[in-house]
Image (cartoon, rainbow, N blue to C red; front, top):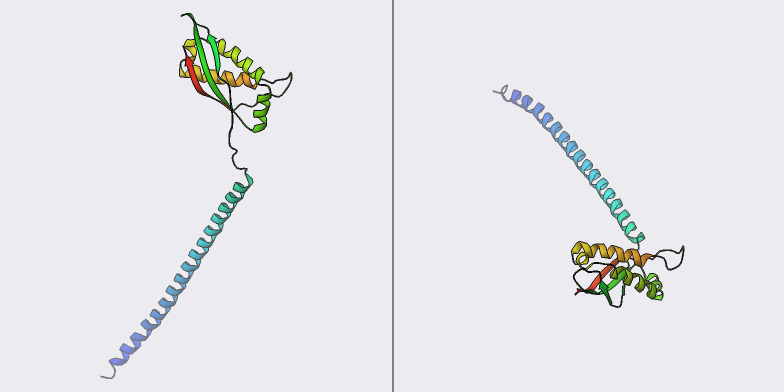
Length: 170
């Protein structure tokens, strides 16, 4: 009977050695995976922090948006061109300009601006300015006329928008 247990011990010894080797391999694989994940996480963190840092730097470099400057005009009342009798337009508008300097320049030359706009408005037909497209075209023409230089060979004014605050055709 003593011979039977001896082979069992001999057979158990190689499996214990194999099990010990498998545990070492498993620990090495787990450690390698942990190192790879840590490296990937660190690389991603660096990449994202650089991208975010650049974005913050760009934010600081750009100037904050300026508040728009509006220049309210006195109301205009003009006779319109019409085949159906006398028609008139009463309109109040506000000009949008990029800064106070431009607003002050236009204020100083307001008689020229008003004259140009009166000539433009009085040349219009009542039917053409009653539609949305007609009003949009009128806005473009107002910007064009108000932007003309005040002096020969001078710089044109910068008008960025025209807003009607009252628009009555009778």
